[in-house]
Image (tube, rainbow, N blue to C red; front, side, top):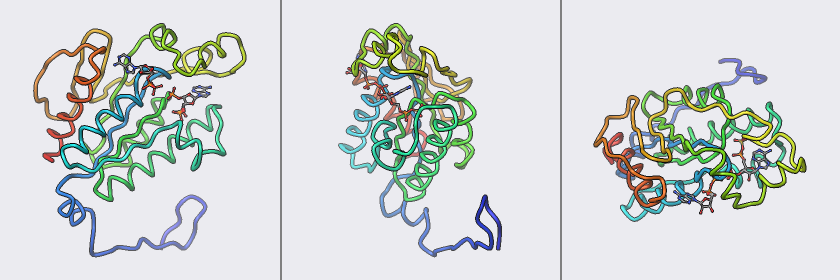
Length: 219
Ligand SMILES: Nc1ncnc2c1ncn2[C@@H]1O[C@H](COP(=O)(O)OS(=O)(=O)O)[C@@H](OP(=O)(O)O)[C@H]1O
Ligand SMILES: Nc1ncnc2c1ncn2[C@@H]1O[C@H](COP(=O)(O)OP(=O)(O)O)[C@@H](O)[C@H]1O
């Protein structure tokens, strides 16, 4: 019996069919691929491409996209610091459940604060969390402005927009970093090949990420 947060007198329920059994059933290992970066840095595009690539190889993955989750689970949250923190915490918990279900969970959120991302990492066993940083300059993201939000933020019509008047804290040690000129891949995920890929080649980004997941989890 324990007390967790505001819940008292609660018990953890075990079930004989666990993560290992589900992974065996699915022929894959559950994990979380966490894609972080500015709005317009290419998070959703990469998430969709790697999802498609995994699907075509018979691997089950599921995307948790910040924008989409704010239409449902997180529709009570805005963009002030404590709301973003709660947003990331909830998505971290959901991602953990998906990984426990045996899925490759691809979370794609700005997740601007380092401590929030680190808290999500801490929810999972070591190496089950692959942090992917879309390290694109603000100028590039702003020039894309796919949703016209940077323009509104510059005009003062959106307050607290990440990169404009709200901070983005880049990861200090992530597993994969996609930048303008080259890709670096480090951390505790075993390195397969140290090749540089150019950001404009979308296919290579997702292909590389697919192999990182493949390599880390022998799927
Ligand atoms: N103030 C402000 N700052 C940043 N982004 C904003 C803001 N207002 C709306 N949007 C839109 O919301 C999307 C980001 O949602 P997230 O849940 O990923 O944000 S966060 O992780 O909680 O910071 C983000 O989507 P992406 O462009 O896909 O990143 C924007 O479309
Ligand atoms: N690697 C890339 N090279 C060139 N354009 C890209 C690349 N990735 C994404 N884009 C484009 O940039 C814009 C923003 O991409 P998106 O994936 O929606 O970013 P985010 O989810 O981070 O907001 C879209 O118009 C998309 O087509």
